[in-house]
Image 1 (cartoon, rainbow, N blue to C red):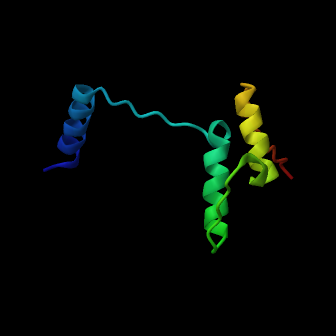
Image 2: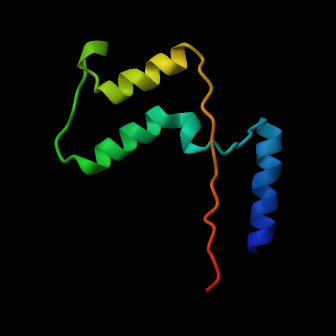
Length: 83
């Protein structure tokens, strides 16, 4: 089966099952990004049993989310000067 046919089959299946895929920038999903990076960086298992045991960065992310504070993605462009 050709790749295009396979992709079309997947699209049809997604439409039938009402499945939608959406990209979310890291800034909008900071908690998952932080947990993923922490897990990759550390070899030992971590377990947090209550809010106070969480790292301060996680508490900040959760509090901002609870308060529904918008996360703004700012893209910058590097300006290079010609010699």
